[in-house]
Length: 84
Length: 522
Image 1: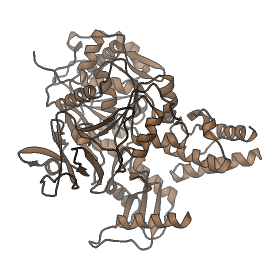
Image 2: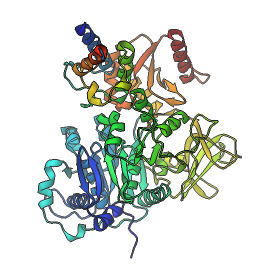
Image 3: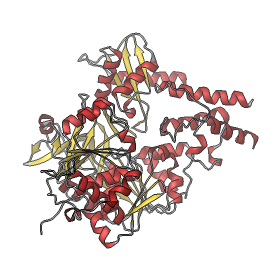
Image 4: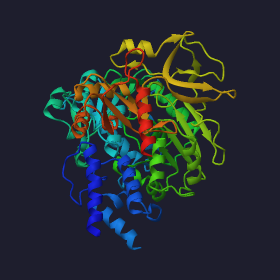
C-alpha cells in the first residue's frame, strides 16, 4: 500500500519533469523545489494533485515548501494524513 | 550645490543618519545601512579601476549584473549606482544567445556576477565580456572590506537627471530582447512620489518577491531604502513560504504580483486574519482581479490595498489606486481600477489618431510626463514609433486598452496586440512563435495564452502545423531558446492550421479550439 502510493507520486513527478524537458533521474530524496528544479506553478499543481489523488487536507498542515520538497517527504505527508 | 540624482543617494544619507538601521535581510543575514553603503562604495571603487588596479579614464557607463535577487545582487546594483553607472540586470535563466545579444547591445564597462551568475560565464561568454568582471559573494567581502577606500568614493558619484539609471530588457516581437533605457530623473520622480503617496516609514519591513530583471524590484528595493526601511528578500525557490515568512518576520508591507495570491490560495495558506501585521499590500506588474483583492482584504484586515499600474517604458509604475483597509473594492469590472496618474505623470485614452476620447469610451492608454523612458537601446525607429509627439508633448503608447470613467479613474481592459502577462512577466507571443519555428522546423506555428482565468493568462500553449513531434524534445529545444516563463506548457500539432482573412495564424481560433477541448473533457 505504502509503496504503490510512493510509486504514484514518483510517476506524477516524473511526468511533470518530462513535460518540462527534464530527463535527469529523480531520486527519492532529491530536492524538487528548494533546488529550483520545479517552480511555484508546478508546486501549486502538485498540491492540487495530492488533494485530488490522496485527499490530502492542506488546510490542516502548516504549509512550507519543505513539506513537499522530495518524493520521500511527500510520501510521508500523505501517509501522515491517511493514518490520522 | 548641484543636485545629485544618483539612486544611491538615499542609502548614503541613511548610512550617516541611521547607520545601524537594517537595509536588507536575506536568508537570515542582514546588512545595516552603514554596512550596505560600505560594500557599495567598494564595488564602485572596483568599477573605477582596470583589472590591473590602475584608474580608468572614464567613469563606467553601463554595468551588467548577472545575479539572482539577494544581498549580493543588491550590493552589485547599489555599487553600480554608487559609481554613477546604469545597471543592467540579466536573468540567470537567460539562454546564452540572449546573454551575448544583451552584452553586444550594451557594451558593458563591467560585469558583476554572484556565485550563481559566475557559473554562466562560459568561455564564449567570457570572450564577449568586458575586461572587468567583478565577483561578489560571501567569500569576497572580508578581503574587499580590508582594502583602503579612496576618499573619492565616500559619496555616490554625481549624476544628472538625464544620466541613465538602468536598462531593463523585455520581450521583443522580433525575438531580440528590447532594452528600455530609464534616466535617473525619471526614477527619482517615481521613488519620491510613490514613497510619499504610500506614506512609507523607516519602521516598515517590506517583502521582496521579484527578480532584479523585473522593474517592480526597483520599487520594492529603492522605495523602501528611500525612507530608511528594511527590505526582506525572499528567494524564488521559497516564494511559496511567503505567508509564513511574512508572519515570522512581522512584515508591514507586502509587495508581489497578483498571481502570487492565486498560487498561495491554491496551497491553502491564506486564512482570514492571517496577516494582521500588514499595513500596506502593494500589487503591481499585472492586472489585479477583484476576487484576489477582496480575498486579500480578508487575509490582511489591517492593510490598505494598493494597485499600481505601469509599463517598464514609464519607469516602474505611473498610475495608482489605493483602498483603505475596509474600503469596498470597486465593483462592476473584473479588474480593480488602476486609479489616477502619479505626480509627474499624465495619462489619457486616445483613438488610433492620437485624439483624446471622451470618458467611458475605450481606446489606447498613453502616458506622458517625466517618467517616460529615453527609448529603446539601439532601436531608434521603434522608439520613434512607440514614443510619438502629439499636442507638442511626448507620449508613450502602452498598447493597453483602457477607459477613464466619469469620476476620472482609469480602468485596464486588456491588450491591443499579442503581448500577454504571465505571473507579471511580459511576453510577446511573437517571440515564442519565432522559437517554435526554429525548434520545430515548421513555418506555420504560434502560441496563445492558455488557460485564461478572470482575464489573467496563466500559461502558454504552442501550436505547430503537421504531424505531432516528440514533446520532450520540443520543450527541451524551446528551453534553449527562451526564458523558462516563456516556454509553452505543451505544444499541440494540428493537421489543419486555422488562418485568418489575411492568411496569418489565427490565435482566436486556437483559443476557441482549446475551450472546446476543455468543455468536452470536463
